[in-house]
Length: 301
Image 1 (tube, helix red, strand yellow):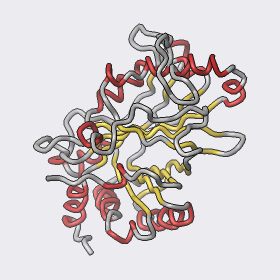
Image 2 (cartoon, rainbow, N blue to C red; image 1 turned 135 degrees about the vertical axis):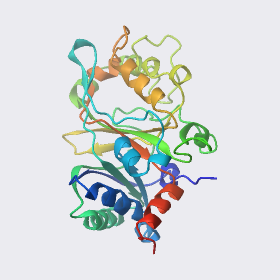
Image 3 (cartoon, one colour; image 1 turned 45 degrees about the vertical axis):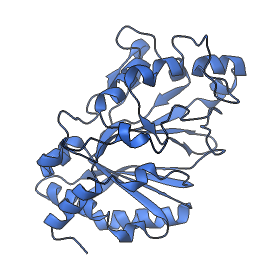
């Protein structure tokens, strides 16, 4: 049975870093995949740091064709919604998500990973993040209320045995910036109608508007995903890193389309107060697949 990368399910970490890489291209792309795969060796998890490695779907398919999920594609085109709303495509070639007990150890492991990949790729984007008041996002609402439990999550997250990419998962990674002043100018009752839940205890509103965030991302309608969202940013500029995992790309893409008001729906009311700055899909292989890629390159330790 294929083993997933354990950091996907490592809840309770206090510091996070997301590093997205662009390869230098040419024949070294294969070497880059092998080098990223080698970062899953034990040396990168010392000091209480989890490392999750993923790849642009097209790059992984090129490098490891027998382990690539069928029809999985990168976020290669902007998603155009109603009223000029845009979800930008900022696809990179690979992602490293590091999480740990404190930012100093995350910082050190991130620098070490960048050094390991020097000459093969450059950092295309970097975001650091942290939890806010245990489980709130920076709107002040509880985030991830509909998340499956850790016992249930693998059923929805992991590609089944026997399918290409078994034990792996699909990651949607987006950075959303918040218009804090506009949001905080709303009375709590209006914020609750935008979200579709009560603010203190996250109870779903019986009369939630059709364009509320809960209605726009209804997992009973689109399919279950496992969210590991975190706040990011500074006091003056901040927002949410959306970190969503699923065994199938379609629930993720249909949720984004619904939020954008497609096809023929209402745009998610929350997008009036927060907007995406980035968007990428990554295939997160199983640890077995990463080790096989590492062994093929003679990188095992």
